[in-house]
Length: 306
Image (tube, rainbow, N blue to C red):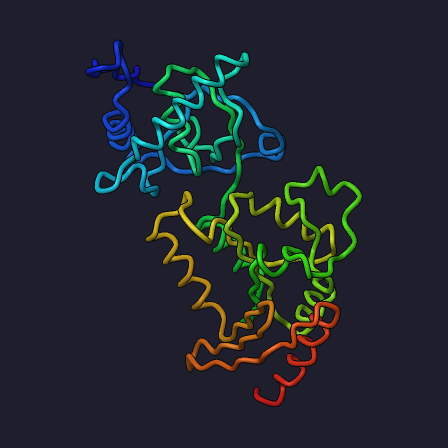
């Protein structure tokens, strides 16, 4: 690991890390050689303190792109927060852990928290709390697709639809150890029965989430409700460890595999044909108690159109 490059800055009264230079050097050092690798369950279970120098900026994040780069205002705000914390407590960091993936050949790749990491580096802190996750990458999607022979699928948003995320939603009974789960919310009422129904009709089940949560942890959580899924796409709502090019390849892999996609939302079911690009929309009444039953009744009519 290269030593930190410290430069004199006017008005700072000391040496400070040149973040942009450091990030540029990191990009050059690991370009073409580094990639994320899977972390085991024990590594993912706990928040740990990692050496700040073992965290590496993510080339897929705007923070690391020369045309965008880090926000020095945000870094400065975190610096001030950390320095204030140090005056009132033994440890400078009180926020959410930096989300990272294990990286080959060494260390961790930052998924979320670049500016917090940069601020910690700037004030000379040696460690920072991290949470290790396994995000969905292209090779994971290929493996998911290889495990099934189906040519039709159901897709649902985990955060907005599968989980009980609104006050007027009805939920399945919470798991006994819900508070210790990676996902704290219970499922929407009827999700296990709905998943089972579509699986019996020969559909694969795919869920998408904007969260920075390990895809295998999501599968385990859904399995505990008997709501098994075939595919999980993580970080679908924003910047992740996945580049735009890889994201497009993942979308193409899934699109080319399935001839039919049934997308289910709060108040609508959409049936899409990959071959003809045509689609049919079916409005739902919005009844929380009868939501899953209504979807099954709509799906029964699909046979008439095949």
